[in-house]
Length: 151
Image (cartoon, one colour):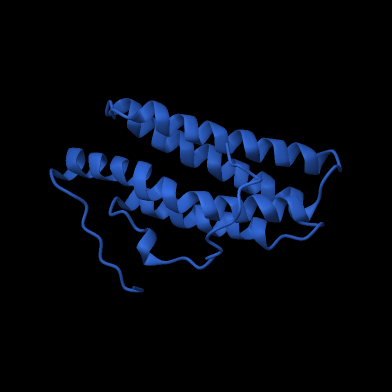
């Protein structure tokens, strides 16, 4: 779950190749995560519901894919990783419900968008990078290699 009361420490909303992990299917999904989360941060009262629905749809697909990789390859630390996904989806669904019911508008959608940008780097750097390394070792026999052009 995303702690909505935690102070925001990283306001960087610009995609960077520093986010690449070297497992292309995951990297592509992470770029999409960034794009969809950015639509939350920039939504209006008119577009807030559509933005949170789009993010929820993306997150479900994104997390299901990673969880399928973890299950089918017997990835050892999968339980902790899956719990983080469940927490994010719980938070997203609470925000979606509040917007649907008219209890909240774009400010709450924008806030969760900012919180997702705060949460994501740590999740990707630790949990997803371990999965990317695991998947690359299984599929390619070695460690991921990343060429970064924007650093």
